[in-house]
Length: 294
Ligand SMILES: Cc1cc2nc3c(=O)[nH]c(=O)nc-3n(C[C@H](O)[C@H](O)[C@H](O)COP(=O)(O)OP(=O)(O)OC[C@H]3O[C@@H](n4cnc5c(N)ncnc54)[C@H](O)[C@@H]3O)c2cc1C
Image (cartoon, rainbow, N blue to C red; front, side):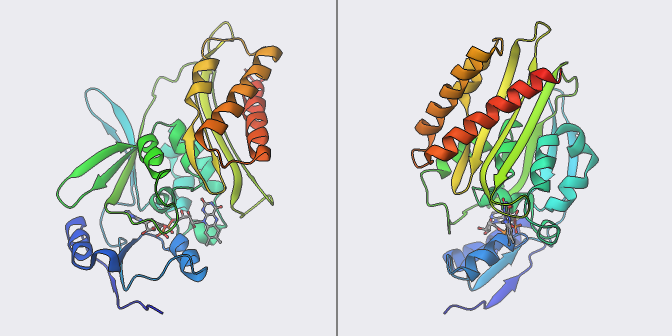
């Protein structure tokens, strides 16, 4: 059995990268180590002899607003602990679905150690549907420069790669979500995780949605995402288009249920009948409740 030879604690990204370049596949980046630990314990992944802990790198655990002439965004450092995401006033103000998602991940002891970056890189983490509906962008460090990639593109590529034990060739530095300062009226947002028990269990289904209703109560823009279990989460773009500028009548919602069902089938043929039905029902339920709560 392989054992750890060294835990490296580089002070900056360049050092972290250079250690990784030296030991390549024999090394592994570690944020909180909570997911890695379960993989090692479960025999799903061997312990890399060189663990590169990112906890000494400055400024990777901050949440701050960044304003430029053409856009405003919230930057979430990849090393931000899930517990800190829950408490942060800016994230509560602009990303309530993300806060809700973090609250539903594991128990407090794990949330004090596990990070949002680590959750994203498991590719099935419960924060992902919430980040998808906030149109999140990932910033990576590739050894030379910083690269931006939309979370949606990252996850859709990830679907075609092995999920567990996947090797991350870049360092995730931060996550950006665009800030909507003048929120349209009648805005709605929802997040729900369905597990086997009420608390601290892996999800079976996770859904998230946001959007707004026009003055005539027709649904305007809408972003929806689904995941859960071992599924890599994805946006429900066909359903989003089908919903736009429509009245949420009983007949129309029944039609939307079948649109969601078909989209789930197309996106991930491994999803069970039960999961497809429950996911479609939950999304329709939340859309209808959002309209009723106007
Ligand atoms: C008891 C228990 C319950 C749990 N319940 C849930 C749950 O309900 N929902 C859920 O989503 N998860 C759950 N988890 C999994 C895990 O705790 C969370 O997903 C957590 O957010 C992972 O973050 P981490 O910092 O510990 O990641 P780590 O374990 O440090 O890393 C995860 C992966 O990302 C890579 N990595 C980490 N940081 C970087 C980086 N910056 N750049 C490149 N690669 C990097 C690592 O090499 C590894 O492959 C649970 C875990 C435990 C032990």
